[in-house]
Length: 501
Ligand SMILES: Cc1cc2c(cc1C)[n+](S(=O)(=O)[O-])c1c(=O)[nH]c(=O)nc-1n2C[C@H](O)[C@H](O)[C@H](O)COP(=O)(O)O
Image (tube, rainbow, N blue to C red; front, side, top):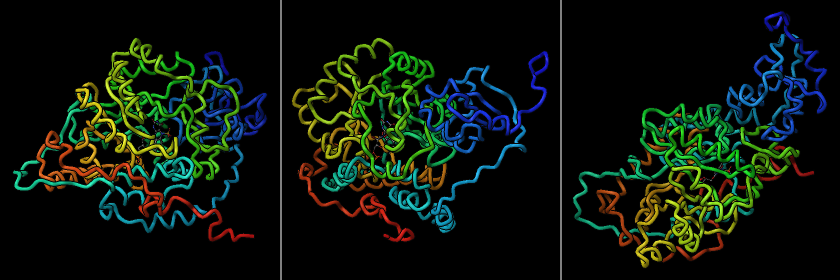
């Protein structure tokens, strides 16, 4: 380097390749070399994932998971080694993915967007066109995925008691959630690693939510940086923060106060994941590379054999308990809600500790298998709150298995303020990008207007329990309905190509 510290000559590939071990680890990202030796134990996704690219060009693996400013933000300037003459970098033999060729053919044959008529259609297309590891991560449920299927099945146990001769010429589907007016009573819930499905990641959901004036809940484990997602919002677009509480409370405090400063309108503390569930499809896809820009303060090698979930969640604090709620109330003025409450006793406790709401949820069936669906817990909770005159003390949301506007209407008739929707928007984004998200939201809107008309409701406030017959909700049948979730959940262990030996 010359006197004013500009680089005189570019580094060569050979020079970088000499630093390929834990003792001296250089990587190349976007044509620049970085000394990440000391950073290895701090890397959120664990050191293993970096060591795989020690001395090499890591750009292709780095790109889908880390926001562009990651190295500037987290790696000391002294470790930025400068430009590399990429002509001198040995080309890596790319591992041939046997499925990739097939997948590309399926992408060529995929239906045009207009042939998607409901949210399940996006799932069917995504299953055929997504990378295996991405599909496995998004579609995975815990253990036997009974709860994941029950989430959607539960809505099939609720029937309507429609009213007729109601003037439904004008139907208004808008409502208010945590004081924010939105055009539909659902929000885009927090789902991690958006860039696994689409290289643009969660900002696509931000743009779709803006266009349809619905709320986006930003995941702690997003692929995009938090600020990228906030920056993608327009005007007074409302966003909430989903929080996995870090063992290092200073990290958590920084995240919460930054979110409040940036204008987030709600803090949803995830309480159903003291440890992330065992998602075998995710594990089977031998998740090894994509990490996430999560905060993992543990220096230990993250065990990647457990799939994406375990690899990115070692920072979560399993000691989180009710006694921590006052601390959260002391560090932020945002409304605080508990996401993942699963019985009426804990809803009563939540009201008593003074939080502003709960999400009755089992994490999309990705945590405790045989947990009940959010809508079933809602049917347990609301009569008890009404008996106490507490039904307006907090806002109650549910999520899990919402695939139709009739599912939304059933939840609101039972007393929910709104519902969260996860996978459908991930699949729409993965298969068709922003146009997919836009169409999915439009389809829901059309369904909502039609179904409200057909049950005789012109406003959200008309939705009430007398419009339902929900007596079948608590009957749990052992069989699994052959819905799209169930049909395609288990990929044959021995595919057509790998004949059993
Ligand atoms: C599908 C999905 C869900 C995740 C999710 C990732 C995916 C791919 N992740 S996870 O990696 O840790 O499991 C989160 C998460 O970051 N935080 C969270 O609170 N919920 C997470 N959830 C649960 C989500 O917020 C909803 O509870 C769930 O998606 C609702 O069910 P549906 O997908 O059927 O709508």
